[in-house]
Length: 242
Image 1 (cartoon, rainbow, N blue to C red):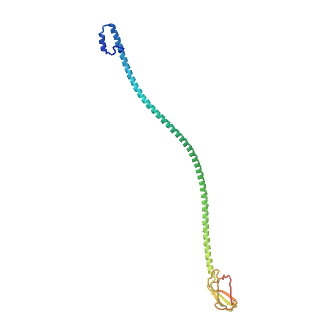
Image 2: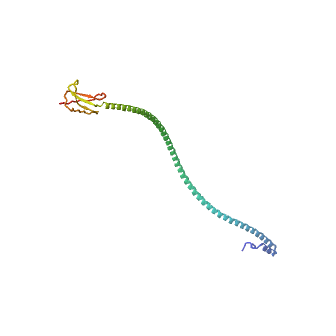
Image 3: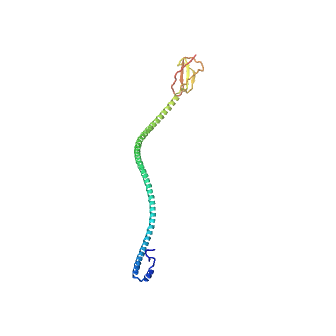
């Protein structure tokens, strides 16, 4: 049974019930109950509002919990992403350090190559200067040799000319047109002709003249019958008789 006997009644029913009661004390008690009932209704309305607010808060808490779970999941993903980024940063720092070491090595190598290039450039310039000096000397030597060659050519031409003249002279001076006479005396009796050599002779030639007859005498005379007087160039003369 309810604590308030008139809680389930409406205001009109309570008013009708109150009017039917003639006792003043009862009426007063009923009015108090009515006031208490109205207060209870207000409290119930307030409690219903609070319950509605509580339900709303519960729903919001559920939503917030879901959001918190989502946020925690995102935080976990962010933590994993941060750890991955930290590992990548560590690897990048290691690669950066290796790059710095490689850059230092390349700078040293570049400096060495620069020094080597400078040294080679200076060596090349010195070699070019030496080559220019040598080329100048060679040109001077070539000019001298050309002049000497020209002089040698002229000298050779002169020698060839002299040799040609000498050869012509030798050819002209070759033994030719020689008569061989045999007799007792050179003068005044005539000597008998033994033979002749037409020529011209060559170097080292052995000339054999056989008498066609058997002339007598102790003197052998060799006579040149050329139109131009020429000298004999005989190594030796041998005479054989019987």
